[in-house]
Length: 135
Image (cartoon, rainbow, N blue to C red):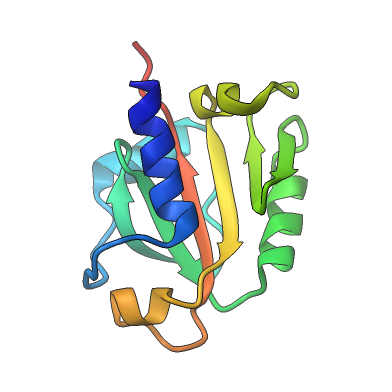
């Protein structure tokens, strides 16, 4: 299961994804995000995904602006900013792979988003919300 989570995160971070049209966020996934205590960044649009894959949003705002907003929204969360990956995650700082077990948001620049999802050319900030299922 951990390997699958690493592959999924790598898929979103490294920009390897199939081309999809923008869809609507399902009521189930909207509820999951809300119950996780996470707000969706204002002006972000849902692009693709679900709780199992990660829920991807895009915005025209810079990654730095989006990161600042989430830091203010989630003051008790920790930040991992290593290896070219910026993640804000629930709880105290943990080591490497342990982040995969936490609620987390990966925010990055992804210039391929407009092509992959038929978005406006300025929609290049990628916001991926990952909420592990409770067992």
